[in-house]
Image (tube, rainbow, N blue to C red; front, side):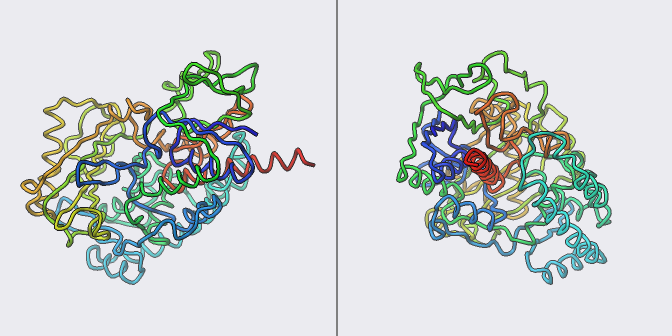
Length: 486
């Protein structure tokens, strides 16, 4: 079988390797000069840092899928982050997260007296949600909504109250708003807001404590060359800087793709991009005007810094929260301007990987969640970045402003120009009406032979989860082939 993969993000590369192992003749078309999609590097001279994802979650799932794809375990080195990260509050409190339960309980009692029992209850309850969610949602595709809205699923969601939004759910375990925010901010990893995202996504913060946060030696994007080499060594054809102009459909069946003005026949086409963008490649009668149907995730302003100081005493991951985090989150998902008091995340890899920057220097990454729709003036963007640099300098990174040798900024508008849906950085928003069976699925609902993987497709965003989507696709092909053999 001949299979085309349109887009070489982590979902496309994983799908290529898994399908290749099943005997598919796979061809990848990538519009950029590099593979990996969001998983790439931002660099300037001697400085290099991950451009997109930095926090490695669910390491066993990651390694398991890589093994199924034929990647040797020693090809990628995972290093545990211990402690996990620091959270800086506007009142000066710094809350440190640990994987070790005793250390975490001690930290909670030290900073939030009387709240440690709530943490125990939270972890106990979230284990149930995690175990059920992994089996019922993460491991399945939903060809129709009835299979998603099964009696078993409805009973569990109601009994566990995981239909509530994250903030309300956490309030049943914690009293201190700062602690609630500490276990709600992880919705930002997938571009959601705690007051909108269903508590099922609370499995993200649970997984940090249960399975740890990890770092890929050399940066998360160093996975991509490993996958590219594996693809090429197994005969997967890769065409860079070759966008697909059209997905050719006759009747209700895929025939192939059109690229560089010529038609290439394929039995299957797998789209690996922000799912709403697939309409641009389809015949007009299949275009759904999804921009009116699907809501994008939050956007972000990304700031990359090369500095001539070594911040070895600062943790790899740190969060700096707004004074009014709830209002800020509302502004991020509902506003169209730069929020008044933004929060930010800082990535400082030299703490865990001394080779991440030149000797006696550091490279930093700042992520500032903002509405996906904003297109700030140069003056407003400058003020936003300067304010956040000042914030982290005063709190943790002393002397930062005068130590900066390189600075680069990426905005939601740049993200949109590069193919991210309406400037959202994490695919479509993970709201309840865009999750599970209500999210785009790996199988196109109308066109035979057309499939999709990526952050906007079930099971959702995050590198291991997107890879899981590619595995669901490969498993679907395997099951279909088995049916035909019978």
